[in-house]
Length: 99
Image 1 (cartoon, rainbow, N blue to C red):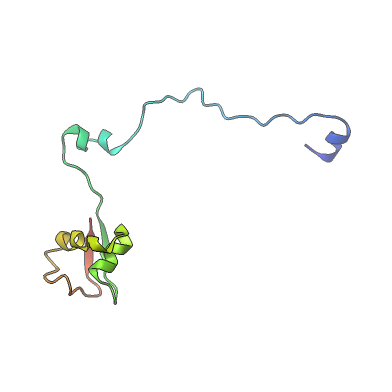
Image 2: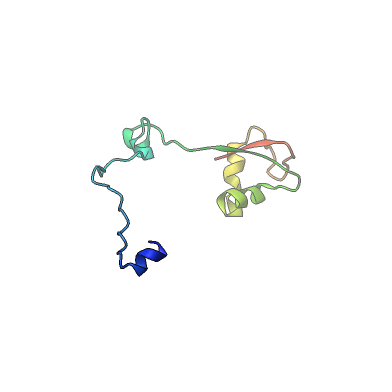
């Protein structure tokens, strides 16, 4: 609405509202609906990430970064047992799987 519309007594049109009349409910694409998802009787799908160890990192520091809880470090250790023999010894450049 412009300044002259107000002076001339013109009324503002209400804004157009979005039309959701064609939207159907009940759909979705959750993990349980996916082939092989938990509901389909298949294995549970988990997303794994990788992380490259930096100088000064420890398993507990990495766990804090990814899980928000430093005491979850055994999850990372267990997922990387093939390359972490001693959980107190990790090295910069190692690529760890973060489950």
